[in-house]
Length: 257
Image (cartoon, rainbow, N blue to C red; front, side):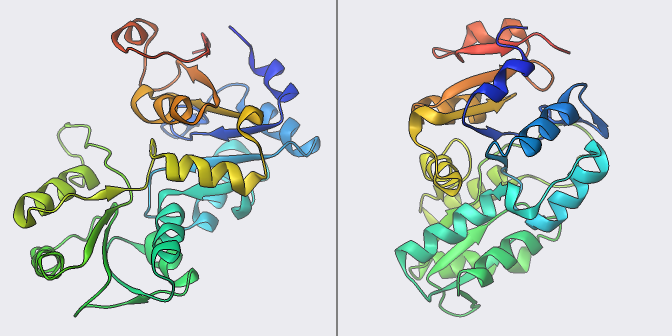
């Protein structure tokens, strides 16, 4: 392993992707629990980053505790839903939004003092959801044409396999952009807004921050754009030979599988 997992704790703070980095399917990746325990025991700052806007931080923390058998607090979670809510509050405090999404996004919106509005919202927010309806899409289209600004929690594509239960946010956004002629603004990884906000949540400087992920297009690109050190793990979606396909590369990568 290049810059092995036991050496990482010498650094000051970490942003960690989840699926493919902490676990694969329902199984934890070997060594992860020991690493997280080490971070906790030594009070090393870290956040788990996710583009999934469906669950709340408490939902994610509970899920990780059960999978990894380590203590995880909601404060250790930072999602694209949280980044989206903080952004719209900074743009228009006390505004309103129409949400095509689920509990995690709705809670984040309420937490920043926003109201949900189905008539003339300031923003239309789109996140991951399994409850998308044509009626909701039609409402969103009318609102965007009337002036509501279109925001995406992320633009992750669906995996394009049979049986996948939802079209993914990227597909829904493409539909809304085509129907309205308006481009969405995306807050999830690799957006510098989410990457910067996560670092600030930890109170870190740029050169104190390490991004660990398994995806070149989101985790690694987002970290590189922010000037963070980046570490690619090969336990998720990216294989070693894939690295050569990109004009950028992480500073180091793990051979562990």
